[in-house]
Length: 388
Ligand code: ATP
Image: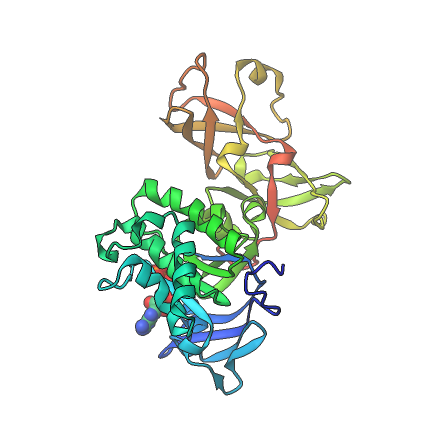
């Protein structure tokens, strides 16, 4: 919001009706996406869903079949305009480190600044500031190839951000790093993006990376956007079964609304066992479903609690928000058990928190699962198959 060092007024990216094809196969179909200045937006989806193709269209490395792309208010693609990549005010960071081996760390970061005709002394100062920002202040004289993978990727980040481009594209920049470093770098990239006010379009297939780094996440499947939202709402209010299962683990069951009250609605879910009925909380911001409507109910493994012996005596057989389930398997992971239960036609994933006095349960034992109205969310299933 006007925090960018260069003070550019009309920033951000607008993609409208983007279509990208390879021969006859459609990689991206009619994609609309708007990114505000200084926003960090991530394209998330399985391999082959069109993330990289979208990025390449924005960069100008792949020519779309249709649509329009605007950057900083200026049309860079569409309506017979096709601005070449080097004139788009975009920098990229890739999975491979791609630092220039014959240059020092400092020279790597200075390069783009010099190409912009910045005088040498000023470019050096700016490059040093960027290297400080990525924690490589002491490494400016090192040849870039004498750095570790994580350090090389920091150089690539410093280089991409130094020229203050209107947009930085990042395609899986952390996936060549080992797990520990990757987790640390998430934080570093995010801090760097915030402190410089850079607009970032990021690509990953790793959902925890997307959730932990982004202002907003765009979930894609087979070239089509499934949902756009902030990480919290994607996880708590998935728009369909694909998003529910791709962003975290989910139990999804289809039922019919029998009653709509003011704060909850009631769903009958025979597929979870005859007589299963859930009350579902209605959140303030949402339009509740109507009576008789088909809905898919979603609950995460950690939203379920397993009734202990006392609770089990207290709950009535046909109580609401209870599921009678048979334990199929249970894996002890220290902090919790990851369990699979059978309930009606479903296999349910449940995360059961343990304590020193909790006793392991035997496979085959019957238990009651409790899911409170606040721990249930829902979406309208597609009438076609596959929504389940
Ligand atoms: P990944 O995470 O594996 O990189 P992605 O989501 O980035 O996947 P894309 O690389 O954009 O997906 O690919 C989208 C679709 O386009 C896929 O079906 C892919 O097979 C196809 N595709 C990508 N590049 C080409 C190409 N050069 N020629 C033909 N088809 C391609």
